[in-house]
Image 1 (cartoon, helix red, strand yellow):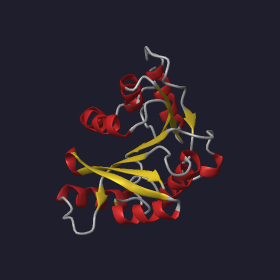
Image 2 (cartoon, rainbow, N blue to C red):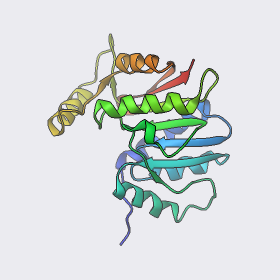
Image 3 (tube, rainbow, N blue to C red):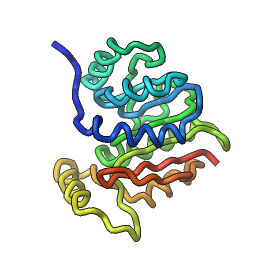
Amino acid sequence: MSARQHAPATLRNREAIAEVLARELPASGTLLEIAAGSGEHAVHFAGLFGRLAWLPTDPSPEALASIADYRADYPGTNLLAPVPLDAAAPDRWPVADAAAILCINMIHISPWAATQGLFRGAARLLGKGGGGPLICYGPFLEDGVQTAASNLDFDASLRARNTQWGLRRAEDVDSLAATHGLVRSARYAMPANNLTLVFRPV
């Protein structure tokens, strides 16, 4: 039986995300994808950015199996074998450095400790000023910006499923980034009331 999982949102958002990645990613190096999920994004983006070594990670054995299954049919050589990685444990990440880090739809579907670990790990891997980007995609709350009703409903459903989940304030993420020497360098409005926030070392 196939281990492949399917995330319907992947097909809907991948082109919009790819446009941002084309602006923000370095030309070469290792791209570390955090919480790669089904692996559908990894396969698509690795094909678009062939000079990057694309390293997908996830804490879930089922997700890792799905990524590996998709990778088996990948025609290129730059999509690396997936590795287990728990964002909440940045000191045990199985990589020493990265040219860029991508995190799609994790921050709101995980405890805050995972986001804290994401930024601690990014600060360690991306280096100081001039280092690569940490690119975060998903729904966020923003001070002074009216939240779409669909996002409020989504937030309520997430918190009903797990009290540690929910949409995060972009300003709280900015503050967390600052404590680790990262600053938000870009904000992109995305389809379906999502955002892409880009952080870079200072």
